[in-house]
Image 1: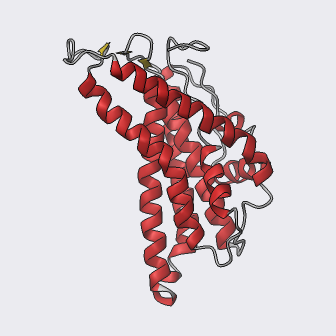
Image 2: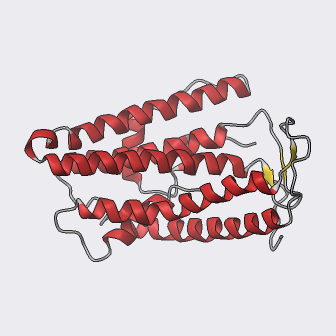
Length: 250
C-alpha cells in the first residue's frame, strides 16, 4: 500500500490549510525503515494535529464558558459530534481498503491503520485550521477557500455514495451465517454487514448535520453556509479504494 505524507495528501486543498498543518506539526524528515515505523510516524502526526486542533478549539470555546454559557454548551456539543463523526469516517475509510465488494471477504495486512491515521490527520488539520481562524476573529474562513473545495467535495460525495450502493449490493447477497468467524480474513455474513452499513450511513449524513449545527453558531451565516461547510468536510474524505474494485463493477 502506498502511504503518502500529509503534505502530499493536502495538495488538492487550499495552501493555507497545508501551511497551518505544517506550522503546528512539522512533518518528520526521518525515513522510516519499516511499515511498523511508518505507521508509528503517521499515528504520531495524527496525535500532534489532534492536540493542535484541541488547542485552537480551546481558544474559541473556553472564553465562552462565562461570557456566553449557551454558546459554550453548543460548541462543546458540536465538537463532541464532530469527534464521533471523524472517528467513524476514518474507520470507514480504513475498512474500505480491506473489504472486497466482489467476493464479500474481509482481509487484513501489515498496512492496516495507515489510511485511518492519514484520514485523522486531514480532519484534525481542517478542524484546527477552521478553529484557529475563528479564534482570530474570522467568522467566515470558508469564503475564500470554497472554490478550491467544491471539486474535491463533489468527487468525494459521488465516490462514497457509489461505494455505499456497492456495499448494499454485496450485503444483500452475503451468507446468513458467518464462515469461520474467528479468522481475520473471511467472508462477511449479513449480520456483519449490518453495522458496517449503519456506520456508512452515519458517515455520509454527518457533514450536512455538522454543517447545520456549525452554521447556527455563525453570527451572520451566508445563505450557502451549510453547503460550504459540508463541502469542506467531504473534501477531506478521499475516495474509497476497496480491493477487487473495477470500473462498473458490482
